[in-house]
Image (cartoon, rainbow, N blue to C red; front, side):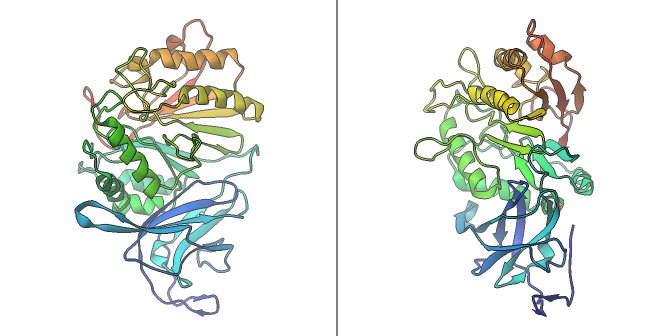
Length: 398
């Protein structure tokens, strides 16, 4: 939504036209706040985030200076002026508008909109949109992003392949540039101002195509992916801090009402050169990685959801489930997936819905595929295969 307010008064003084934000998106959505990451057209001081229940941004519900403001290196000597903000103290399940201001003057051309989530364990209805695979090289119209924006979702979940740069060199600036290239696309930029994001990468946006720990140089590729992600993507709290505070993966979880969302990082610890293969990571150290047992974390969170009174767990997977393409749970990681389902069936965890990306297809499974992957366990899991956002039907593997 693009909101302009010619000649309106803000805070008792005439609002002057000002445009200094290149792009912005929001994330870490909760019942009481959200975060914003934005790029300024040039270095600015006196930055703040304005939040209001009114699109005129008056009166203000919240205003805060930036959490951080840094200049990051991009490709070809470019410098990106990135600012981050955190809004707190908001009311649950309420619509808000926001804008970035310099010395109290907001950039009204870049007004955003969010709705805070329902309170924890509150019975509520809400809408999220899920997709993956945004190939900017294709010429098809960007009607998908307009459609997402028209849905006015509480949250937009992107399950990987945000870009298709397949960066196979040790190049942090290139990783930043690839994300920025996506967020600056016209329809995408408009959508992100009205749909807070939850995003996790897959392969095209995390090193080379189909990369994993057995791929030469993968530790460097993923290190750059993880750093660029944290530089530019507003995200939920990360799940795996070590003793020094470093988090090797970008796995996240968040709760909306009575629904718990688990979004594991299925690329950082993926290894298809060991037996059994793993996409979650099970604590084995290979290829220079001190691996995290993310598989155990998922199992623990399934049990914790039951303890917390959660009614539904949504497992957000950047990998597809059925064996139509390589890298799927069924083709490469069937044993690991069967372990998850056997545990779920034996421990009375809440209902599970698997939502997956990557397949360039849309589909729904009532549990038959899951049951075939964990025979004898009485496991049950519904599955929705989300459609690609800007791509083509797969023929073989992309």
